[in-house]
Amino acid sequence: MRLKRKLNYFIKYVLLHPFRLINLLKINFSKRLKLTQIWGFPSTLMIEPTNICNLKCPLCPTGAGLIKREKGFLTFSNFKKVIDESFPYIFHLRLWNWGEPLLNKEIFKMISYAKKKNLFVNLSTNSNFLDKEISQKIILSGLDELIISLDGASEETYKTYRKGGDFNKVINSIRFLISERKRLNCKVPYVKLQFIIMKSNENEIAKIKYLAKNLDVDELSFKTVGIMDYFSKENIKKYIPTNKKYSRYLLNSGEVVSKEKVKNGCDFLWNEAVVNWDGSMVPCCFDMNNHHLFGNAFITPLRENWNNKQYVSFRKAILTCKKNIALCKNCPGTNKQTFIKI
Image 1 (cartoon, rainbow, N blue to C red):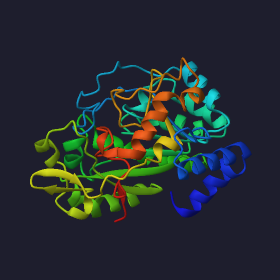
Image 2: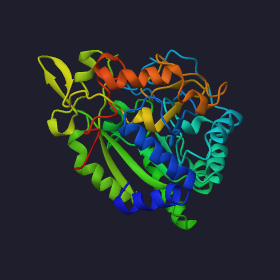
Image 3: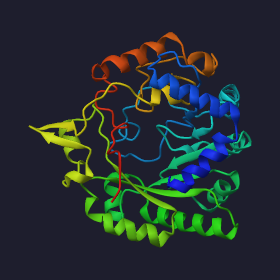
Image 4: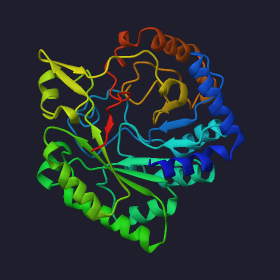
């Protein structure tokens, strides 16, 4: 988000809502004081509409077939339950995790319900299902932000990673979405094109900038490729860019290491809760197979789980020796070089 947009976001979704503002202050005080039992409740919620995807992206655990938990779709009734029990404290809803959200037939019903609660809602998609009908539904649903993954400025480059995807279909769908938004005189969704920089596409930076301008999207963001421990070193090296400024990692004696040292603490565990399609709660989106299970939001209210023994114990571990937690020792999400300016 740019500065003006961030300010408008804060005023609209936080400042004008006393419960949310007070809750946010409680969270920040808890974080500064390193409290493991947090005074407030999560301000941001990530809910997984599905862990099923239409693509086979090699560095994605879904695409690579590494997700071992049961596959399925979030129902609207369960979604509504979690939102209602998290209200009025949450103000930001992320509708994605390990799957393609637009595969869920009730996704627009979920977006509309969240907007009635005056939540900021964003959704991340590979855009292969973004036809004319879905584009119109997205615009009319009131979705605040749509993140579109496009990791190539040409069909050849795009297909090296987004396996099973259709580059031209994605480009045409973006063009229609933008033109339809203008025709309907709507300001939302804010369309963000996200380009993950890899060895295969690092020479297309100028091309993707030109393409983004030509498509008239609202923003182009550059994300460095994130690596998780379950991939082989040989596979990882195929994707890390040659240009060091485009990578958050270094190759050290054949080992892939982060440019940044692992620091204790994690904002995520104090600010945000993750609920999978089946209600399971985990520390963050990178716990793809529920190695650290904090309860089930469909059985026990999220607010009761937020400070349970599992959550508190994990926060203590994060504060004392984060590098000893397999999930966190090479976290691809908290690195300062996750998103870079080019």
